[in-house]
Image 1: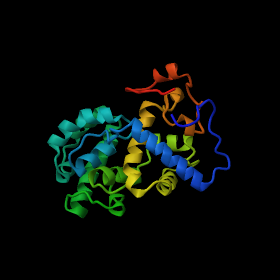
Image 2: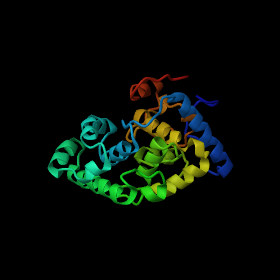
Image 3: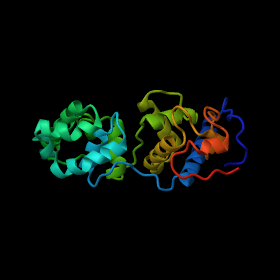
Length: 246
């Protein structure tokens, strides 16, 4: 915990842009300490695998996607394999991820476009990635940051929710949120920042009942009190191991 004991939400009314930047970076440092192992939770070994896994992760969990992808990647190791897939077979594989017909259509079209426009290879530029079927800025940023080492800041539901709770933005628009966050943090931090915020959203700062009393950034958060503030009760809401300071 930082200097003050968090008993009330931090008042950020009138906060200057410089103060917001400093507070945001302090939050990032504290999240780094809490989640030193933060990483992409989709299993992959190639850019194509990550691209497909990210598309499949819509409306489901990374855990569920990771249960499906080992066999999927074994059967379809290339873009050409997706382009020429048997639809019924692919639908059967993807059914556990939900919306499997739409996802089957998406990955088959993705494979065809990769073959037609990029020689079967996943491009490593934002402007080219977003031309692919089913690929928006969020998915492109995931692939750039984690498969190619190009800094990207994907804004998923966790990043959007926590950015508003932290007072980093008031926007609901993922593109605007990405723009505002990129202005707050050094480019070198973008990819890992998204992982830390996602880890925090999944483990502590839950959508319905955040564990405020077990939060490492409570003293810097204008939304403190939105959830359980008692440390003993709050720590029970945290998913995964956690240390709570007094």
